[in-house]
Length: 302
Image (cartoon, rainbow, N blue to C red):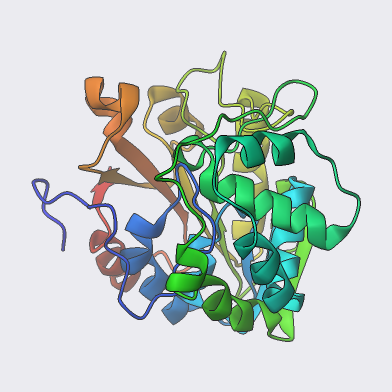
């Protein structure tokens, strides 16, 4: 059990966990080693991840059947390329020099070929500043170059694509470009849903923008409603969310687990609340045994 003074640390993923091939600001590798075993033990149907990002939790769970979705078509396209054309993807990315000139040329390009779009996405992700996926209001990726230390080399040096590809090629894995509500509405008894939406800003007025579409407070309300519907159908729904009074009120009658992180960057280092997150759990097996399992993840708020 985690005591109040034991903090979850970044990078605690199990040695056997497949590392994601993408760098992703706000990714959940630090949580996967604790949460994935619980998900595996409860999964009887489909694993559903409606906010795919780097897919860190998916790779840690490694399910036989999964529905992976995101509104970002280029992100989903990159996952499809890793599943279907890993050797070609890796060869193309490896041939690109790592420098600002190449980065900004690729950032300005809009290739139509699916493989070339995946190459562009993976290269920009591995070399951009901080692994931050950011678009302007027109939907154009605009994160600056991250410098020479940002490199795609781990893709081949640590065989990331080679290790990720078989997990995505399984016959029961579905990749879709869709709104999170559609994926949640597909969940039922025996399924496990893990949601990790964009949620860094902690006010109703301004939730985060990772793309051209803002994930606003209305989306938080939609997410909570869809999660309750899925839970009522017998799915286990787990949501990573911001630590703030608004979210606490929104999920007032639902189990909330307080997670704390020791690693903070940027403004988070100045605000201790930014180092805390909620794990919202809608558990159809709301009994003493399940409560003990959740206590291994963090401190349950009553």
